[in-house]
Length: 203
Image (cartoon, rainbow, N blue to C red; front, side, top):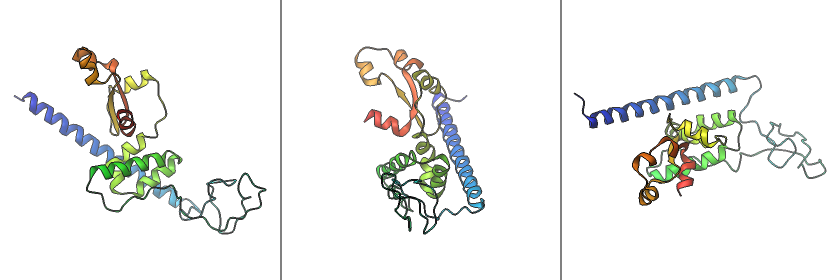
């Protein structure tokens, strides 16, 4: 007979395996999309782009194309070259030993990716190795669109990688105010939210 403790351990192991499989599947899809993008005719990821603030900002450009200058000027500025995005966070090649540092990098990446279209998000994650493997789902979840309270409650019935269960009425104050465990842990008091947003809420 399997004891309650063994059953809980097996459930944790199974959840960890499912999460690892989901992370691997996500990375495979990311690499596949990157290959498709780079195989497109005339696609060159190193090609310069028009910087922010200029008309047609973000579009690919040549080394001497005239894109009409900043949107607020007379349209005569000339683009000669475009450097890398200055807002892109620096991701170290090696995984930092400290969890706090890894989490700081992950949150910076998540905030940055919210500014990019989906295909660029996937391409970025395909380049960052250990970070995508460890926190890819958590980073992607940060870009979720807002949802209604009922949707968040419904999603809490099916936890997924990159998300946390959040108690609407927090457990410690609820216990202190005399609410029963059944009420605190009821589906009506739980929502599923992106992990980094959960940290921001609890902070």
